Amino acid sequence: MRERSGRTSNSGAAAGAAPDALPIAAVRTVLMGDPAHFSVRGGANPHTRTRWGTRRRVDRARAIEQWRGLRARLEELGVRVVVVPPDPAQPGLVYPANAGFMCETDRPLPAARRHFTLSNLLPTRAGEKAHYRRVLEGLGIAPHELDPRYRFEGEADLFRAGDFFLLTHGRLERQRFVPALALPPWKRVYGFRTDARVVDPFARLLAPCEVVPLGLVLEAHYHGDTALCAFGAEREHLLVYRDAIDPADWPQLTQRFGDALIELDPADARRYAANSFAFASDGTSYLVMPDGLSQRLLDAVRERGTTPIAVDVSEFLKKGGGSVKCMIGDLGWLAGGALARPGAASYARPTLTNRAPWIDG
Image 1 (cartoon, rainbow, N blue to C red):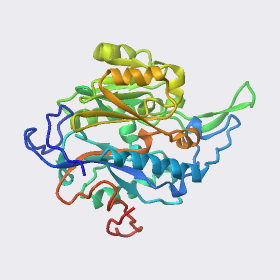
Image 2 (image 1 turned 45 degrees about the vertical axis):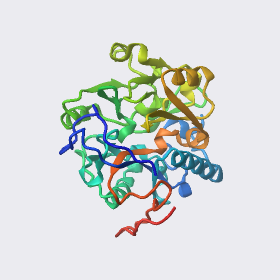
Image 3 (image 1 turned 45 degrees about the horizontal axis):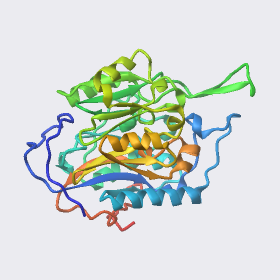
Image 4 (image 1 turned 90 degrees about the horizontal axis):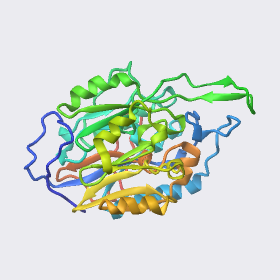
C-alpha cells in the first residue's frame, strides 16, 4: 500500500480541517460501480441513443472486461478502489463521479472529517443516492444533503483547477422528443445536468477559494468533466474543449490559465480526452486517460511533467456517455489506520435495510 504524508493544499477549506503541516498516513481512495447490470435505461445523453432515438445495447461482457482493466490499472498505481454494489434497477451506478462532491481530495484527512455533498440527480438516476449514502457511511464518511430544489451532479460539474474551483452548468430541460425538419423527423432534447444556482452554496462551502461558473453549450458534453480536466501536481494545467464552453465564459479560462491551457482538437474531444482522472503520488503526477488519443495530446501532457496512462473503456463511452473519470468517484486521500491495502476489503454488499461488512472483491 502506498501511503503519503500531509502536503500544503490550496483546495478550499473543509470544516474542521487539520493544519497542513500535520503528517497523516493516507491512501488515495476512489469509488467504482460494479458493472454487472450496466445497461442503457433512461437514454439521458446523446451517446446512449442512435440517430433514430432508440437506446443503445451494451456488450456487457466487454464492459466488465474493460471495467476490470481500469480497476487493475488504478490499483497498480496504489489507488484503493471501493466498489459500489450493483443494483439491476440502477445501471447508472457505474458512473460514480455523479455521486457527489468531496472537499479537499488532494489533502489527507480522516474519513470522519471529510465533507461530502450528495448529488441531486436526474429522476431516472435519483435512486442511486441511497446506495452512495450507505457506501460512504460504511467508510466512516457522513454525507451532506444539498437543497433538493437544485439539480447537481457532483464532481462531474465541480472540480478544483489551480487555486480555484470550476463549476459547470447549462440549461436544464425536460428530456423529450420534439419534431424536426430532418430525417428522422424528430430529435431528442437532453439539456444539461447542474443548476447554476448551486454556485452560491458551494461558494460558501469552499471559501476562501473562488468558485468560477462556466456555461456548457454542447449536449454531447453535458457534464463539465467531459470538456475540461485540470491536472498536474497542483492541478495547474487544463485540458479544455473550446466548442463545449459558452463563448462568453471563454476569456475567464484564458486569463486564468494562459500557457497552461491545452485546447483539445475535435477528434480527441469526441473520445472524451478531458474525461480523465488526475492525481499525484510519491512525487509523480498521473493522468489516466481513455485509449485512442492523439500522440500530439499525449506529448503535450508529458511536456508538462505528467505521465499519461491510457485505458480502454470505450464501451462505457459509446453506449453510456461516460469515460474514465465518469467511472471514478474521487474520495481523495483518506487517512487512518483501518484503511485496507489497494485491492483488498474493497467490496460492500449492503442490503436495502442494512450494511454487511466489507468483503474482498
